Image (tube, rainbow, N blue to C red; front, side):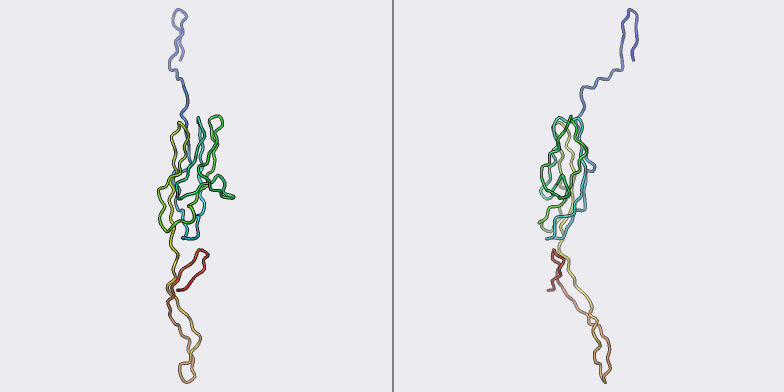
Amino acid sequence: HMSQRSGGSYYVDDVVVNCGSTPSITVSTNSLTGFTYVVGSGPSAVQSFTVEGADLAGDITVTAPTNYEISASNSPFSASSPITLSQVGGAVATTTIYVRLTGGLLVGTYNSQDIVCASAGASSENVTCSGDVTSLQTITTGTVLGSPFCVGNGATEAVSVPYTISGTFAATNDFTAE
């Protein structure tokens, strides 16, 4: 608002002076869940999120936790950490980051592990990953339908013979009976 008072003086009020913007990093989600595979058959399927930045003084670095891998490409997935996203004029365009649970892990739960997106002067954004490596599956019961058997006086009768078999599936989905 500007007004004139006597003597030719002008007065200005309600002035907003912007001395600079706050650097920011934005991620599309703060959580990725459901990473899983059967022991010996990893890595897990790939999931993704996007990251972008505004009013930045430096590049964004995206750093994976120990049990997860990140890639800037999914075809092919090429694990690398950290990934550097270059800023141009203070901005990082929306960029997809691909994530998977690392292969070769032991049976267990791999939860609450953070991918960190950081840039100088900006608040970091984390994407928390959760997943697990499961044990091999076991088959334990079944029934065999047998051919007709002699039951006496030359009569035949079909019979069922129950059985139990135990074993495990290998990473190649081959079943080994024990």
